[in-house]
Amino acid sequence: MKQFELRFLDRLEVPVIVRSYIALDDLEALNEAERLCETHTIEVWDGDRRVARVKKGNAPLVPEDRQSL
Image 1 (spheres, rainbow, N blue to C red):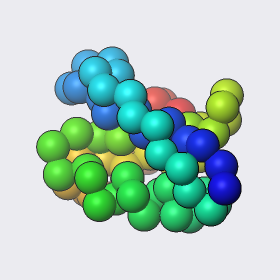
Image 2: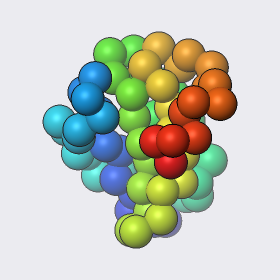
Image 3: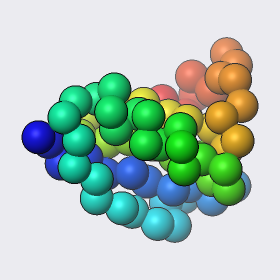
């Protein structure tokens, strides 16, 4: 088991909620972010490593989203 951070971002890309989440692996943490992304974009972090980004409403990523990586 690993501890991840789920960072809920506002429209200015600033974290407004940070939630700890214990998961078996990156994929399980990503699934949780996808489940919770109805109202916010969520980034999944494993320490200093950003694992994934899930846009609000699970909207598809577009090339411009690379800038926020």
